[in-house]
Amino acid sequence: MSIDDLLRYARVNRGRHLDELRQFVAIPSVSAQPDHAGAVKRCATWLAQHLRKIGLTNARVVATRGHPIVYASLRGAGARPCVLIYGHYDVQPAEPLANWQSPPFVPTVRGDKLYGRGVSDDKGQLFAFVIAIEAWLRERGRLPVDVVCLFEGEEEIGSPHLLEFVSRSRSDLRSDAAVMADAIMASPARPALVHALRGALYLELTVHGPRLDLHSGLFGGVVLNPLQALCELLASLHDAHGRVAIPGFYDRVRRFTHAERRILLRDAPSDALIAHDAGIARPWGEEGFSLYERIAVRPALTINGVQGGYAGAGSKGVIPASSGAKLSFRLVPDQDPQEVARMLRRHLVERMPHAVHGTLRTISAARPAQMDPRHPVLQAASDACRLAFGVRPALLRGGGTIPALHCFQTVLGLQTALLGFAPTDAGMHAPDETLHLPTYDKAVAATIGFFDAYARQSCQERKQIA
Image: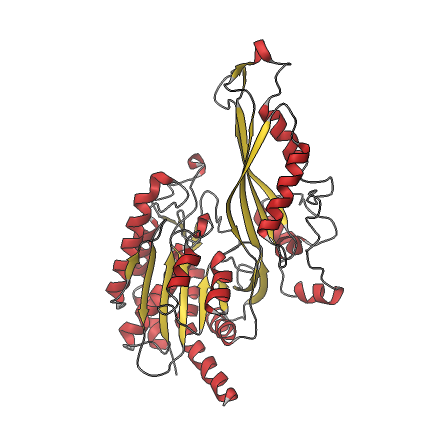
């Protein structure tokens, strides 16, 4: 069945849809910052109202012990397949604000790009599915499959309350598969279909010294500076070859054969492209692996931020009372976040100078996830991308983390198709985050086509089973 009428609907209403996306992006739904808690709630309310406006009349905001979830469903009569659509409406902090050419929450079109925090991660990619649902309902009056929407407000802080919500809402979330778009493309012209993601572990390390800040002229040389101790501890986390230096860290890391590595690299972006997108002249990291392998199948430890002492204008002779660092691990299959946290704690305890003491707090943790590329929902996503972009998506492993993937797999028993429609230079998590509008038009076409493709794939699977 042709979907030309649906694609025409999206083209005719492109301007309105862009205006609606700009309204969505303009709400500063930064889940990590308490000052933005009200904005996160406003964003959830806006999204639920918009879903009701396009025809999902039971859309509602569901409170959690943290930020709310937006839920909606559309189930028809009969035994049609049901797909759960996931996305997150919360966004990363926009700092440093001075590095934005236009304010992060004043979505601005310059040339063929839309700029603003969340335009690619993940409000824009989420909204492509919303546009697709609207097109089907307005043009056909129904979708070819049943749908359940679960749009989260805490993905950027590790989804701390998602598991609790999913566990108690199994009946409402009953589906045959899940789909989401929250990743980058394989290249400027080729979308990605991601079938595996690394897990994550976020921690905060604090080193405590004197009771109060001290005058560095009066006490410098006799009091161990907590900031110096912190720097020495952080320096001990990697060796000179880019490997994590925590004893036992690699014990559970799965090794790939040469044949498996060749298959892995078949659709992978080149080292040159990855370096270009990162804006670096010389890559760094674990020796013996391509840059893609370091991202996709090797674990990593990153120091995300350091604080302590005085960093303002001019000088201040001070020994800080404490200092701290934010750390994050990206973990591969078979690595357990809790076990890695225990390894890190032992490593730090053994190296903590006696003149100071430290605390280590786990902020969030998520396990790695892996999907079956042969599953009908992944096949349907591939078919839809081929029709919209003229090429099949690259089948990739991703270096990031989406806790929902593992949650859906373990609690609901669902395979998830994770699509990447954001160009590699979209600046996700960085200043001047962008959405390339011509690419977005194709992404919308792919989401429209996905529903039809999934209905077909499900029908074929049922025939094979029968």
